[in-house]
View (cartoon, rainbow, N blue to C red):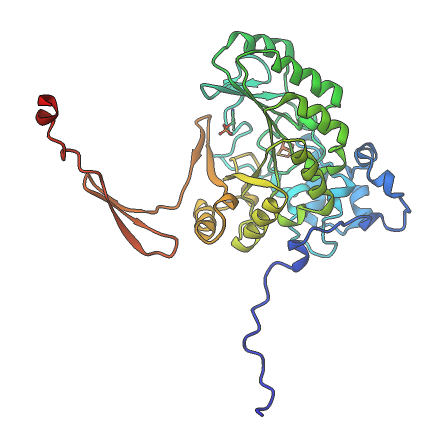
Length: 405
Ligand SMILES: *Cc1c(COP(=O)(O)O)cnc(C)c1O
Ligand code: SF4
């Protein structure tokens, strides 16, 4: 018998901890010792009321860096800080580079503005025929129905108008929007966003949905919401029962890191699915959060397990004060290339750049076309092998002969 050899077959430790691959509950977490009854914790109104939104709240639980401290102080007149206890519990107490922390705790870098950054990077304000309605594409509109969210993402493309902290307010005129939609028969798809539409009460949201459903040419409704991640407690059976009256209704959530997919989140997403609501996910590529193939793979796999189809991966908009969170486009392409062919096609989002100034979403793809001319295309597969595909020959058929017959 040979002496015990070091086990060279031991796989290299994965950069993702196992806990990130599982669906776990992080409650009560930082609220341990406060003896909060489970039903209180599960009450979304309690979660909203107990959000972390001051320096004192934060420092009760975690030690801030100088950059974060200044960031929190300066955020008061830019984009507010507000973090639900549910989401706050995902923070790793002693990790200054925690991917959750980077998304929701302000940093002083947010006040450093590069000359190519903009307060309205997608040119939404100039594409609003009526306040709150962005009509950029021929057949669909973006309808901003509220300026509040359950928590605020530091890189938010609409930080100029959400949270109520900045100077600019989100002008909304729901009646004018309904009138515009009634008159514009080319609009067949309305996407409710904000802010977060699921922060509205069931009654208010139902008023909007029923008004839209009464317009005959509107075929398709969808909601963009980060509430299933920030505040899964809001996904009540009553909300789901209300929503299912307005089918076909799709919902796009916004998860960026696998740790966001907790047990509570999974249950909320399943509840939505069980009411017939198809779910998609839109992620933003963020430095130090998900600019890594292993993290992204874990995220998209967990999403599929929650019956959520990864829909878009956004290159971050050039919002003011976002340079510290920006990732090079090459990295995004590399991540997509690392997924395509290597895992389920259903797991792969479309990587897009929302063209600065208002050009809309432009797909960005790895280049699989090696060569193309009239006779053939040469393609490369996920393993890097090349294949030739002959183009259909155009003049195989003798047209005179056909005419004679
Ligand atoms: C993203 C977006 C839409 C929806 O685009 P899809 O590609 O259809 O999901 C519609 N209007 C605006 C202004 C948008 O930014
Ligand atoms: S949830 Fe959406 S709208 Fe709200 S702060 Fe985050 S990115 Fe902006």
